[in-house]
Length: 269
Length: 74
Image (cartoon, rainbow over all chains, first blue to last red; front, side, top):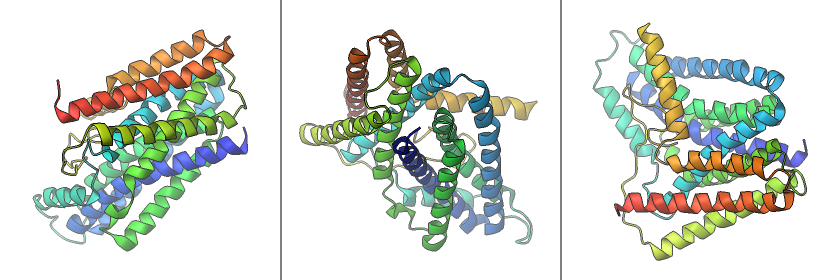
C-alpha cells in the first residue's frame, strides 16, 4: 500500500474523529459543568475504553480471517453510504438548505436538560446522570469513528495507524476543549465534514472497484483523482443550489438530545 | 434480559440509521454500485468511467431530493 493512500487514510480518520469528538466533547463539558467533572470524565473515559475494545475485537479478526477482496467490497459499500451521506448534508448546509450543526445550541440544550434532574446527594459521590450522559455522548459519537477506523484500517491492513490517528484527534479535541471549554462552536465542523465526506466517498468507490476486480489506472493515485472529482462536484453543487434555489433562513440544529432515545444518526449521520 | 433486548434494539437502530437514515436512496445506490463494479470487472476501461459518474449522479440526485424535502416541496 502506497504512501498516498496511507496519508489519505490518516487524514480521513483524523478528520472524522475530530468532527465526532467535538460533538462528544460538547456533551461531556455540559455534563461536567452541570453534574460535576469527576463523573463526566469517568463516563467519557469508560466510553473510550469500550470503543478501544470494540476496535480490537472487531478489527483484528476482520484482518486475519476475512478474504481481503470481499472485505474491500463490503467496507467500500459502507464508506460510500457514509461518505455520500456526509457530503449530501454538508452541501445542503453550505448552500443554506439545512440548518448548521451548532455546538452552542447543543451545549445550551444539554445543560438545560441536565439541570432539571435532581443533583447527586453529595459532591464527593459519583453522579450517575453525569456519568451516563458523558458515557453515552462519547460512545454514540465514537461508534461512527470506530466504524471508519475498522473499515479503513482493515481494508488497507493499517488498523494500528487508523486507531492512532483517531486517538490523536480525540486527544487534540479534548486538549483544545479543556482550554476553550464552551468555544467549540468555533470549530469549522461543516468544512471538516465536507472534506472527510469527499475522502470517504473516494475511498469507498476505490475499494469497491479494487475488491470487485476493477484495477484503477495509476493504482492508489486514482484516490487523488477521485478526491478531485468529488471536490469539483461538491463545489459545483453548492454554487448551483445557492444561485438557482435561494435558501430560507434556518435555525441551527441541536442534533443530539440527552434523553434515552438519542442515538447516532438521529440528528447527524 | 431487559438490558440485552435494549442493547439489541439500540444496535438495530444504529445500523438502520447508519445505512438507511433519511436518505435510503444512498444505501440502494451503494448496493447498485457494488453490483455494477462486479459486472464491469472485466471491462476496466468502461468501469473506471461508469463507476465515478454513477456515484456523482447519485450524490447530485440525493442532494436535490434533500433540498426539495427541506423546502417542503412535494
